[in-house]
Length: 197
Image 1 (tube, rainbow, N blue to C red):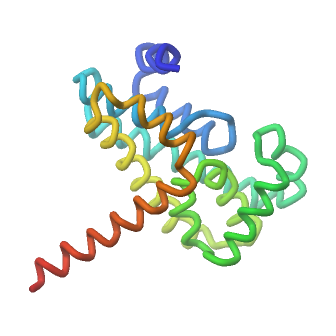
Image 2: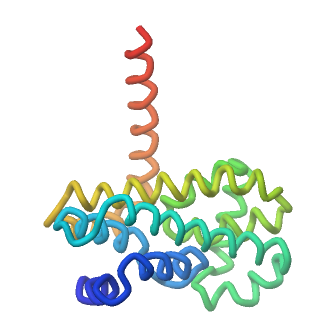
């Protein structure tokens, strides 16, 4: 895995990050979080700069999720049922995400980035459910920024231990990452409240 990521970074640099994330968000089987964490590790090593890395990650994930949204809006559920399995979007995953979408609405566009298998479907469903582009963009792009920042900074912070994130994500992400987000939000509220006192 590290060899392939090294090759990607060396040959394509920031543009490679954009291209891979576009494919990953649309539904190609790409370990997006591992890529972002590796980018953070390269920032730690001084091989990449933080701001261009963040902008590239945001651009790639935003373009990818926008393409998915318009595919869902223009081609609907039949397209997803026909081509979804080729992008590892199974009927089970589709039904699971649709049920979550009914409960959480547009908030799933934000949180879905942190749930492997879910983020690939949320934008399609937003398009199928005829969300306005403004409503979609507000939640999807905010989520893209937060997701990109989280994993790139995580890789930068972990340094040489960045690869441990891959194991963590593959084993525990469905439970630990949403918990991490909740704790982060609560910490933010706590610090804001403490400042205002």
